Image 1: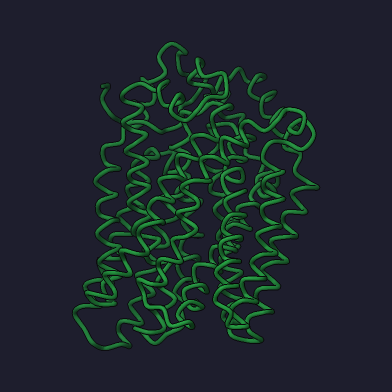
Image 2: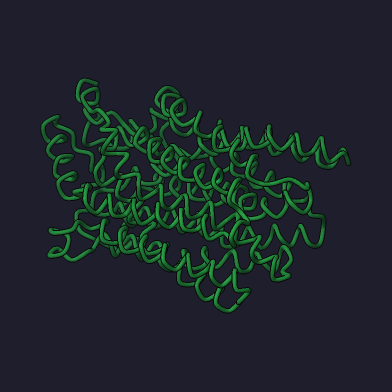
Length: 453
């Protein structure tokens, strides 16, 4: 354990890298909560506005894996000068910020065509840099300390979401939301400029490689994958057990996003029209609860393994959603249901944080430097696949069964995610200095406390 003990997370550097996720999170928190309200202003019901809300996820299904591979294969003459992720991050975030302002212009002028066309542009620009932004952290961070790095990155995302929600409490609806949008756009542009100036991607990657060489750690578990290849070719390099676990992880990602994204898409309208309350405070409670769980979930992952930590997170989500489901169908007292939303989101937020610290890292654990973008794109393809379908199906349930079906709908998919995750056998980081190079799978199974295949 001596070599692993010398790997210390560079927190200031990780915060700089996390600025990309900060801009992503502040944008999506704003988009997911404001856009449904904007669309209902044009008379759309739950399932109708859900069709618009899945546009970003449909685009992401196509573009995110492509952008991951494209940044992996970024031409060397440009990579040597700018890096392979930073150009996508800077250009994408600035273009998205500008078109986001134009989206608000369409709403303020009640011009549906302008708003929808700008929505399409802003979503394409967000896809331009989302996968490279997420892939940047593994590029510059050794595998054994990626979970704590991911916790820092997720905290940056929470900060972005909280900033928007707090601003929204005071500024939403004022001056046609121009002040609110201006602050969001400023933060997105400022963050991208800071990254362009302060993040030397190539230098960080070289320092990571030098540190690993000095400690005698070889983190490329699949040595045969040394060239940039397609996702299909990458998957062929995995053993049957590894491939099964990877797709079980991805299936779990799909299912818990089916649960969580149904809430994030519909809660702003649900809370105002069904509960008669503003949406910001319950979501702030969820964000704070998540923030409190990020660091403990890192230590928990080291103690009991990533898989079982993720399962605990799923159970927390199930508890919160089950409590809300029982209560929302057992009483007609609106005041009681309103009060119940806070413990519901405490559990959901804590569970979501516990899941997210480890789930992405588990998905890219089998990647090499050359294939991180491909694995990242695969992860987001499944996540976006869920987000491309769940708003519409949840909207149908709310339109044709009852608007209160939102919570049991989310509960069903969270419970299914627990089932699929229970069968995962790979994905824990292994102490590289203690693992024989010729037996890459044995320690992985030991870390999960599971028998060999």
